[in-house]
Image 1 (cartoon, rainbow, N blue to C red):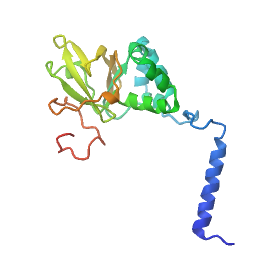
Image 2: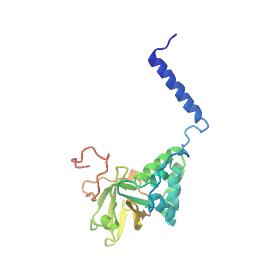
Image 3: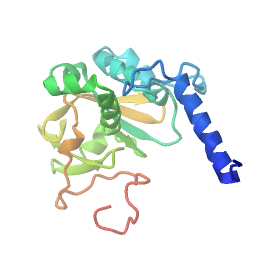
Image 4: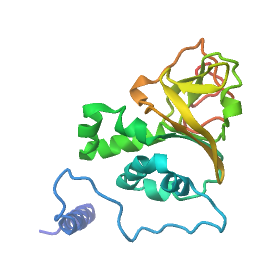
Length: 223
């Protein structure tokens, strides 16, 4: 029997897929696929301080460094210099060790938990705006909302006479205004859970750059 052209193309694709599957058959089903060791990573310019440089060099971020290393692609992402400015709210060792609970410890070790950790890191990253402590306390004590790289919102408020920034009513900045190339980092003492996102129209948005992809029409009130 002679196969038609579409059938022959389909047969070739199936054979190719079968060969690709056999090439990775030594990995257990549903296990987490780590980053290939030969992945190309562009070199950084001399004098650059990447987000990864800061995380790996700061004693209070050693557990965060382990989380980044265990999430495929994030070591490379943290070790690049973006063309945009950014803010990163870095969970401290206290945030990751004492304020997570059994659910976090159990789920994070699972393959799907690795994917969840990646989303969690994105929820602590604000692309497009390098927000200093002065920017974060400009609301004069009023509750404001800040959009993150997950497109969800966290609340923030300056407490203690404007000297302490607190996110989601629980996560305080312990060390702020740590400079890296293109961005600024603030260390916080609790994780910001994406499931705890806020959206209150009465809360004004902090002044930040529009995050591409977060909304289709910036004329809408909720964008």
